[in-house]
Image (tube, rainbow, N blue to C red; front, side):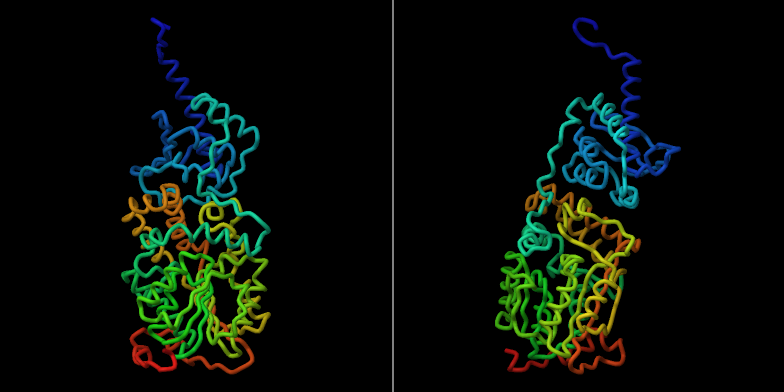
Length: 460
């Protein structure tokens, strides 16, 4: 001490560096899922809020740097030493990445199953407190966008709350991410160079062709979003349609788009749950990107409801994400807390089994796994290009969550952790013949132009 001021000595700096090293070491072990007990070195350099940096012996030139911007990052990990703690640190902005986020996410499986003992937690807490002060031991605020649905699981009220958490952000935000098509599901590419809009239009047409739509038929779209599929079906195939969603902003925009396209008299959009529908059966039914919200306990009811809403011999197409039986999940995962509360993924066999049990015969199954990374990377590019506007519209927390969600999902599809299928079924009870040549079933859009030009007066 000199003149009332503390003098920082070499030994002080050394002690501080050692404390930083211990915190970074413990944090790095958690980040890697305690992947390598011998090296005990993180794969990426870690920089702390005071500027101290722990380099990695395994770091390659140009590798990202994990940045802990405040003690709150470690506080989140102390409370939840798992994927949820990391998610909270990221979404809150307490943790960031300098460099390519994708390089960090490529190690995403290291974030699953992190299990720190109470002794390890205590040791981490004590070391962190030496650097960050006692504040690291306080419960940090949870990001405001974290979802905590209330009510009985799979009740109508809870499902509405969960769906609205995701879809009622704002129509403008979704337009910034999805582009003009406003289609929030996997596109269908003919080449990797296709534009997103062309691939989404192709997807809509593939679905319409698989459903063998004819002018004047009645079509139901379960989970219609902003109405893009029904708009395509009405303008190109001249069907009448009903779209249902749990999001009023979606329904409002869908109605507006239908009026602008001149098919408002053919299409109706309602805010209701599929379980509440009492309409007469439809000729054709589609469910695109909605099945993930159903839940394993409700799959039987879902299949039975679809059967009831389809005429004998009618066709139903289910377009949904699936997973391997061994894939990790849970209510405390990043996706469930920040993106799809109450969302569940199942092996495709689960929905096929339920559909067959109620009399829906499987006629065609197609995997679109290679198409989804192309879709997601275009959404990621849109979000990055419109980042400032997106933050102004939806807030920085949500944009940070979506950046992680979109890129992480793209890697998941590329690695085969998750996949997606279109399953086409027909309701037993009447004959319905599909083309013998599958190429005709999903053929090029150009081959279908002539039938689309036919306009039946009964469809107007």
